[in-house]
Structure formats: C-alpha cells, structure tokens
Length: 524
Image 1 (cartoon, rainbow, N blue to C red):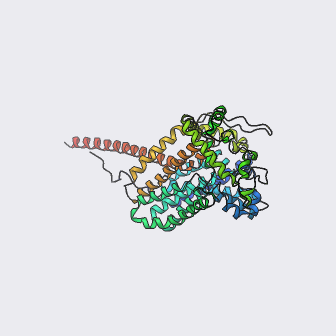
Image 2: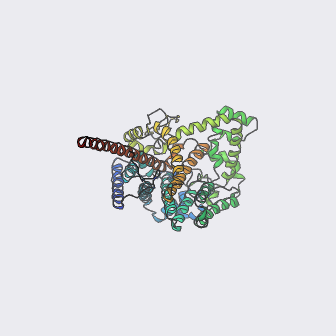
Image 3: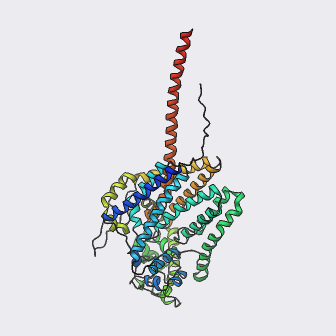
C-alpha cells in the first residue's frame, strides 16, 4: 500500500499566525532594548571620534555653517551621509552625541524589525526567525557597529529593509511598495560609493525579467530614484570630469596594487620614469606638503570645502579640489603596476578575501568598545564563526602615544569559510526551484536572487578594489546572509519533520495491517 499526499513538491510559503508572529516580534524588540542597557552598563559607548578624524567626513564647521553648498560640491563621497551628519549637528547643536546615539539605536530597532519580518515573509517559521534575529542583534559585533559613527550600520539596515519592500512589491504589485524599494536603493547608492549605479540598474533588469508584463509599473517606480542617482553622476561629470559618485577610486585602488610592492621595487619603477613619485607616497598619509604642486595648480573656487587644505580639526581636507587630479594620478600608477605585477595584485586579493571572512568585530576602529566586551566577543566569535585567536587579531586597546603594531594577516573564521560559499550555492539552487512554482514562490525566489546579487556584488567589488577593511564590508550583507541561513535551516527542519511523519505513518500502517490479518485468520 502506498501513501499519497496532496502536498505539492515545492509548496508556497504559508503565512504564520499573525498573533504568533506579532508576539515573537514583541519579544525581539524587548530583548533588543534590554540587551542595549546591558551593553551600556558593560561600558560600551557611542563613538563620535570619526566626525573629527575621518577623511570621508566634511569639516564639522562646514557641516554646521555651510552644509548645502559643501555637500553639493563634494566630489570624494556620495552626499547623503555627510548631509545626515550636518543636519544632526544643526538640529542638536548642544546634544549631538546623544542625538547620533539615539538615531543609531533606532537604526538597530529597524534592522531587527526588518530582519525578522523578511524571514517571516519568505516562509521561515516564526520561532526560527525570532531566534536568528536575536542571535544577530544581541551579538557583540552588531552592538559595536551600532555604536560607531559610520555608514556601515545604516547600510546594513537599508539593505535588509529594501529586501522587505521588494518582496512586498513582488507579492502585491502595489506601486507604493515598489517606489519605497527603489527609493531605498537610491539612498544606498547616494550613501556609499561601492553601490554603483550599475548595481541599481541590475535590480531594475532583475524585476523586468521577472515580470515583463509589468514593465510599465516597474519603469514608473524605478525611474525617479534612478534619475536622482544619475543626476549625482552627471553633476560630478560636469564639475569634476568624473562620471562617478566618488573621485577617490585611484587612491583606494593603489592600496591593493601599488602599495603591495616592496618600497625598493616602487623606487625602481620611479627611477625608470614609468610612474609618478606618488608610488612613494602612501595615499591618505596626512602630510599636505606631499601634494603642494597639485594645490598650486588648482584654481581657487571660493568654496571652502574645495579650497581649504586643512580642516579646522587640523586634519588634511581630502575633499580639496586638488585631489581629483591626485586620485587620477594614483589610478594611472596603480593600473601600470597591476599590468606589470599581476601576481602581486592577485595575492593582495587573496589576502583581502581572507580578511573578508574574519569576524567583523576584528576591526581596529572598534577596539575601544571591543575592549569593554572583549571576552564575550571572543567567545561569540569562536562559537558562531569558528574563529580562533591568532596573532593577526586586533588588540583590545592601544596605549595613548604608542603606535599600534602592524596588523598581520590572520586566520579566517572556519564557519564563514565553509558557510558563505555553501549558502550562496544553496541560495541559487533554492531560487531556481521556486522560480516557476506559483506567484508566491516566484516572489520568494526573486527576493533571494536580489540577496544573492547584492552579497556577490559586495564580495567581488570589496575584495577587488580594497584591502584592509574587507570584513567591515561584509558586515553590510551579514543580515542578508542570515536570511539565507534561516531559509536553509527552515527547509531542512521541514524535511526532517516530513521524514518523521512518514516513519510514524509507516509504523501505524504496519500495526493496522498486522491486526487485520489476525482477525481474518480467526474468522476463517
């Protein structure tokens, strides 16, 4: 006898009980709030040092007193994060540290909410969704980035929130959900130069491939956000001769090409006359005298963000107009080094990939807060990531006035090395199996493809053009990878339950058949 079932091979995700889902969401938010109090009493504090120290940020005085003009003429960075900084400083002139801390706490709450709801919408069970959300949101890594004034944490939140609205748009077709999705993509692209306009265009094509019959609606919801991003690129082309959202690509790229060569090799290239003297000058060194000839040849604009050599904090102003040409020269030298020493570049990419797969908390700018919860962080990294301490791990603290030791390449985390490639491949197989199995499954599949494209994009671009901060890049997509893990575990648990039910049903059938045979024999 064969048991038959009406359950389809690829069932559509079934919505969980709204009451159950809401109850667990309340638990997640309460646990989030309690954990933040616990970390505060452990000594974690919101760090605002980047505002005065980081070269990505406009001079704080200009943020306060010349915000819109400075942001408009910013060639080195997309404008939104500096606009956010300046607006906060203006709105809270005397309490801006508390204001930033409060805003980042709100980012954390939105991230927890969107991460949980995204897994629910994709069909992950409420208990598993809540558990994984709590594991991520309560982890030391998440808390460290939440207390650091930089764009990494907001971007992680925005990417997760964008995936939620993508699924809403795919499932309902509502114009407002599509507009919010593409608006979030535009905000991401206008915050971080890594998210090039081509990434945005790729998402438009993804939706067009999924719903060709809805091309007018997709064009409607994507056109204005795309136009805004293109206007930024066009503005930079007109003012600075560069169709990008950041003019620093040459300075960044030189760190993974030119400055991976030994100094003597770089000197030899310079003596041969094939490269400029910049091969001897590490970018972002902080000594303006190194660029005096470029300052001298740069016209005066009467726009402080483009003219000032030093910020009022005493730091070099890398938004100075001269650095448009400086970066172009770094790029020219880097491309020549790349063609002459391809193995050096590939070796650096390999080192970047190894760093990419280290715990994101192992990042030097986080060291002060990390020192407060170092033991917990090490235990969590060992359990969750399989990361063993190595000589390359960032020290918990550095004494004032003593230069930190040179960071050595460290050991990647075992579970990240195994889990990231596995989840990417599994996600591709999962999306392919759902793409033609009904409208609900197609919405899940396309959302998973969005996640995969974004994860692969950040992985490839981050490791191809930068070296040293790669694990920070990965943190932006860690919530998306957690969603893939939730889907994978959920499917595995469903299969285990199915096997258990079949075994149980087979056992009951056997007992019924045996009882029937005995009765028939007695009657005979």
